[in-house]
Amino acid sequence: MARAIRILGIDPGLRRTGWGVIEADGNRLIYVGCGSACTDDATALAERLVQLHDALVRVVDEFRPDEAAVEATFVNKDAAATLKLGQARGIAMVVPAKAGVIIAEYAPNLVKKTIVGVGHCHKSQIRMMLGVLLPKADPGSHDAADALAVAITHAHHRQSAALRGAAR
Figure (cartoon, rainbow, N blue to C red):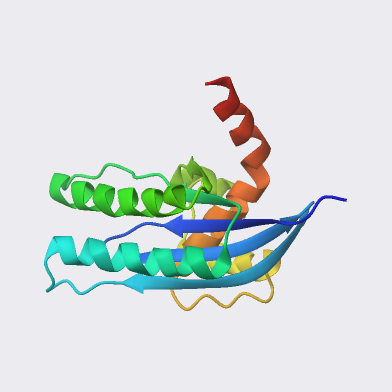
């Protein structure tokens, strides 16, 4: 009998990085925890990155995930904002990787399509579907809700992600 797989979903951001932990036991999804790591805009960039790093280290240490999933960065019109988001995303990938956790990446549209059924939807629709998929979850922020959505996406796509990784 296979054991449940613990999955950490991460929605990277410099102001707020959301995290969500679920367990996938076959087709059954079990809510474990979620939250956000927040930084202060007035703080220097390097210190904000350290704050995100330390918060994610605490999450990985506490929940001991087997696998992790990170939402892929989209490029927007503001190059500086995209670069800062990329730096936060790097932290979100390095922390689980250093702990030996397998990491997958998912595009925002795939996350939305997996959770709601369409690639373009409102955050309220994601939160509503989270209530159906994970009835015990009550994310305190959109970032935490998005991170849970990323974890659920990984639970649904993890076999194909593993096959893609093995083919490389």
